[in-house]
Length: 337
Image (cartoon, rainbow, N blue to C red; front, side, top):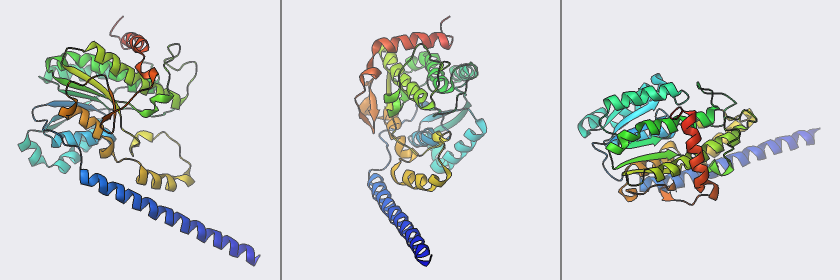
């Protein structure tokens, strides 16, 4: 019995040492990676003074990070957010980070507007207000999203991930196209995901009423984002409005709130995510780049990661599927009867 206890104690000590050693290695890796990125600093290519930017889902994660950086670059940033109270709180925090005096003197401005992408009524109300109040729109960043949620439907009866990630942004963009064209040269930035690779556009069950898999449906919505951006870029040729999509990488945000991680695995997951996942600011760099950099002026219909153009799988470049998805989406959101 004594040997059994001693062995158990030895195994516990070994496991603790292994965990501590692994933790130290991860910490060292994180520090080295952070130091390398700190030398480069955050993206800041050009002044955005005099430019108006709309960012959906700007109260947290990637959207919040992009809003703060573009405000620093002197843009007028409109935060389109579902929860107004949370958005106002985030705006106060961003102003404190950037400096309210710097905001006022530099010409940048942060504005909160209510926008629920799970409600076509809310999307239309948001766009109506923008068109009434804003003389120009230089950049639209379609950033907000929902990730691997249980089966739910939007206010209009669409499967939630397809409804928010694709259809809500589809309607939003179309309603603001006139203002974007009048403000040209202007840009549309569509945040997708590398997980598009696991999605398929099933026109027989776009609303997932026959079957639902939360992972597949997220991937399908992200594939739809890329196909939408590709078809929109084709339609906007010669207008001065560019459209590009991107993947931000694996980022530590609250996007994964519906992902169930076993209680015992959470400490390890938190350690791994801290060591290897991007921070929201790191993840937002490509969005900021596509919104502001002179390097991509006139570039349209492309897909980016880490501020570089990347290749797409053939299914994300299928123009026939892209056009069919566009036509069906127009009917679903009520642009065509």
